[in-house]
Image (cartoon, rainbow, N blue to C red):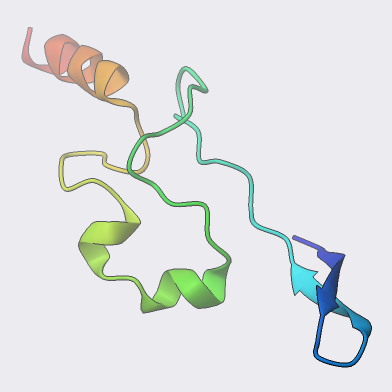
Length: 78
């Protein structure tokens, strides 16, 4: 992911802290559109989230967008 420098003002002076960069937004595996309901968090913060906060509670949640999921089921069922 990488690290970026951030200036932080303390009571006495301005210090530079190294902060981990957030990952890029999650994308659909088929159409590459951004996925809704998937947070952009660094892994250490992502671990602290509940299972339902990490991805949507539906088939292929966090992997396919809702449109591609519907198309997949239309092809499989039909």
